[in-house]
Image (cartoon, rainbow, N blue to C red; front, side, top):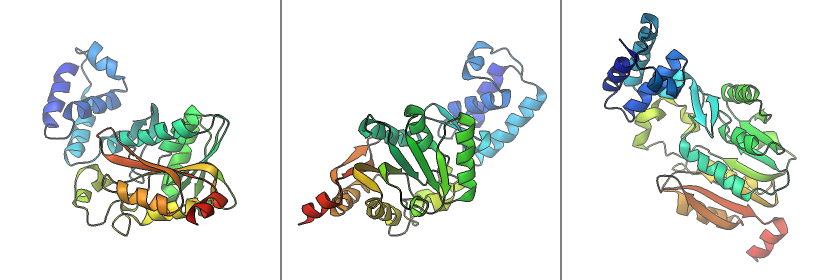
Length: 285
């Protein structure tokens, strides 16, 4: 079977999924160890029986719903190839919105940043790749995920500091120009937890109490003690949580609060600037 014939067969086998053509090509490139361009340039190439057997096994797992990123162990984010595993969330394209928003608001001088619940290290590493002079700390509660973020940091030669612990606990005594997080924000009763890739991702990285708002509220409250005056807090959240987050940012004394929409037009990221303790107290009077 030629590569062109095998490529078509894989697409047919994966039909019914969200992206059969893309999934087929990603799995082919993974097994063959070739770039996307090879699939177009060498349609007459004949994969070996061993390669075809490996592909068949991966396709069977994909048809059972396993994420392609778990099958290949890799996912691209901000043009960085990240190692991924079942210990973390798979980085989503919409989260690149947070990187864009951060770059638009960081000062020209070197800054100090904290990425809470870093997972693979995607956000922290993307920002470090764009701003190598910044000090970037990444906090992760899961020891397995923290180890994964450290491996990505070392492999990409992007020196971020990965600290294991819960939210702000590993950051005692430190102050930041920006704090970012993509925390758990899904209600435990949400039916979407039973479909798609999230079935294979850790619930601890997806689900939060108080209808998904508990961790978001905790970060908004606590970040005030860790932000420099004029520092920014950026939080990714569910598409129906924008108005609630804006109200909470306002109630906690942040200024310039706004919610940004993702590439699908849904409210996805709320941010605000911490004016400083004295200014915040004056606002509340």
